[in-house]
Image (cartoon, rainbow, N blue to C red):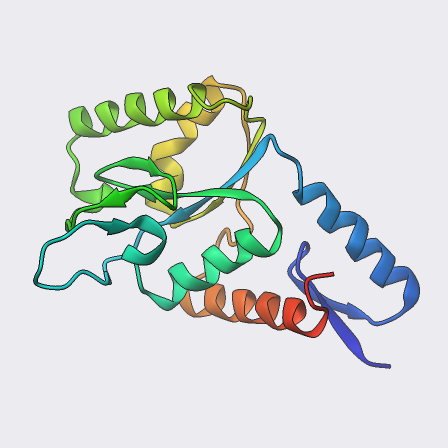
Amino acid sequence: MKHIWNPVRLRWIQNNARNRRSIENQIRKYADPSAIALVSCSKAKAFDQSSRAIAARSAYCSPLFDKSKAWAENRDLQWGVLSAKYGIIPPVQEIQDYDLTINELSNKQKQAWRDNVREQLSSNNVQISKVYVLAGKAYVDAINPVLEELKIEIEEPLKGKQIGERLSVLNNDINFWRMNDGK
């Protein structure tokens, strides 16, 4: 019997009608308007020498960023970029080139970053109840106190996986959506 990829549970399961219905029901849960995905920024960026600002969704160009962005978009989730410089960046917001990671911030700067993220999450028009974080441990550790304080549930679909494993999981996810036309 063939297997299909479950993009919610991130594993292969038997391909039968019951499992396909189960996957559809699980995916519908992701369409919750009170849930967002936060995709980690990347060192690789698409800026050229003109130093003009470009939309955040196009500014980062690593394979992990592109596949994480696709993960959120395939689920019709609102999403933003988790950035050490800007906090949470809406995909359409234009940004300038920068080179900064969360690990480079002092404790005082991290606290200011958390305050900024708290403001960004609480000023959203929709009350956010769940955040899917597609980022490394350093970013998760940095944002976790804010999410706990705001009583926002956190889910890490790629938790504990190295970059190669993350790419493999996300590739399987993208292939699932291609085979099933996102349905």
